[in-house]
Length: 350
Image (cartoon, rainbow, N blue to C red; front, side, top):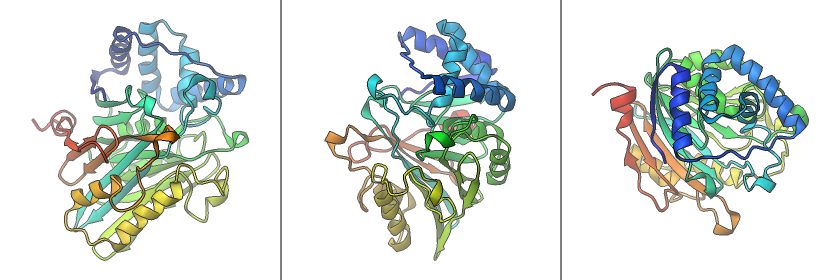
């Protein structure tokens, strides 16, 4: 993973990142059909209305690269939402992630396996942001500017998991990866995030996991027309909440695009995590999280090679002690290391 650090105003952060991309000779072969282009343009209007800082950051990137800003922003708004026709670009958008939060003996934790086609591993990034206005935060992403997960200087953790949408149900608005970025930068705790997500238009199905240092945690099961909050279960001295790649509540189940489809073993991964939390006597919280994410407690990241699909990074956040652990690759094969940038650059405790 790349580990850039950005600070200052959003346009300047965008130009810095644009120069990184330019120096690396990164080229964008973007293809959008008419639906995607129209959707992207309309969604970009909402991004500018509710999150103009992100619009400025994108402009910084496109100004440096000399790319049409409208087209580029439209592409970014389609991510995690309606990139359904990418097979011909060897870039089909599929996501099979598992994320969870738990509190045990008064301490709060988050874990995630980020599962994607392996070609996305090379360009994945763990970005430290310190904007002039807004929260400091760490953003892990297979893209840029938007992201799949992160934690901010208040200890608020936000993560998305992809849920397939029917094309006719997709509406202009924020995609899941911009929701993550928006909540990290704007909110202090779960209550803030729950209020903020109600005020922005949501483009397509997604799960948004929110956790804070006080042990508040919830999964917002989101569609363009409805949000349902799924709260944690309690077992003894621990509570937990899990999200994968389908809506698991009875309320939202009919919003799944294909209710019978098991997206990249989504149901198996949910069952593995659920049984682990229900039945495991946890002695060491971090060890437990590592064992669960690395597949030692059941199916989690053990995708076969012929699927062309893998866990490209795995992360654990200890919200209580401000520690971040990351395995840059499948945790069956890669060790977790401590990322001290969170304490030093995001919490600014050095």
